[in-house]
Length: 291
Length: 269
Image 1 (spheres, rainbow over the protein chains, first blue to last red):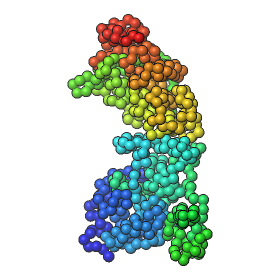
Image 2: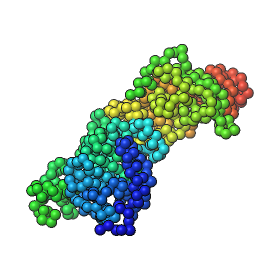
Image 3: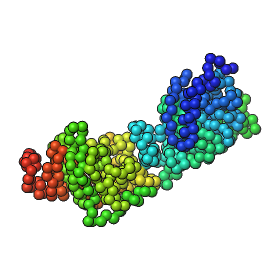
Image 4: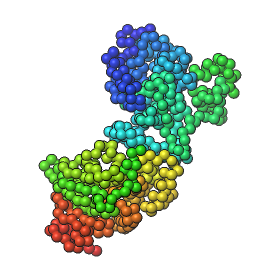
């Protein structure tokens, strides 16, 4: 039920208008970080204040909202953001990827392919991919505007020099339409190929850093790499122990203190729908009763 | 890429100066930084700029390298596509020039190095900035350059913070020369090093300059450095160039009173 003391979706209309303007600019210049006047939200920074503001600016009463945190619909962050919009916007919510029109996500892209008309909203902690190499904001902005991206490869070089391969496993830098280098938020690099040519609109909101950027549908997104160390979207070399999926991104779960572990899909909706369709993994029978 | 336009292999007509400076002035409010500086630098030539602290040497060098915007004057550089006034260039052009045909060696290596990045990464950065995308060849170039500046190849994955001051300075030189620039600006490259390290560094620099046919502009207050490295010398005082000529000529037969003072105040051991 909507709490009548708030405007629809919490933010006032002028603020939503300002955010929509930033989103439109971001869509017009894919990968460019658009500054916006981020508001204080009733949650701490790092919990998705940027994503929540973008979602609030996109929501209409007919929307069906899905919120995931690391792929899961039932973790604290996802549950509280979903409740927040249930209360302040009164929109329908779902856990099924296909039914949702707006999906707010933290650190994952759903396994099920997105479709035209869906909006995927990412929560971004640090939007600047060059930040840890060049601390000056004035300098990184200049590097973006002049397309000086050699430094991004220095980071990958350092990875190979130290670990023998590109060890960056999340927030793997990408180049958008051959122009802007973008931080895809801390999604695993396994998800990077899904960024490219997606029929859905992808929006990125960073609340603390006050930046919004976007990938319009069917944008070409390329993960940076070296000729002799090509990009590799790696995942744990296992099948899901609950649903047996071989092609999904897995979480490793320690099950006791004797070294036992299981690998399960990080996308809970994907795993559940597969089990409902009759797929069973290595531990599926035993765990199936409880899940 | 447009880098070919500024290519290191550019053919420069020997009859044209590499860098031609005319009427260069920079004021800080009412005070003079440097005023009315003019000179030509020819390909393969090393120009020394000496003078006491506050005489405008560093201001002049910053103006030449594009770090400071001078008030008047022109700095014409012989790019591959003909002479261009670098002060009238757009910023992207000037920055591209700064990472291909030019190099800048800072007095303090911490200003010129990325301290959080390994030695190999530091040397490779300029290569990657001009489009190198093959890890193996970047690594080979870095190893080669570390060898040329006498840093052991086993230190390639160490950070500069683990290096001594002299090694940091040599690493900075390697990082700057890896793309084969044609003009190197050096701001007191031996300042802050002890004398034996200085001597080795100077020896190394002299070798590299001769071997690569570099042109260089070296700012220093150490007359021994210019005696060893520079073909020509410019003496500055209070923002003015008071004397210029061949190094040996200026040092052995100083004409201006200030130059005479400078030469006579060098300590003898």
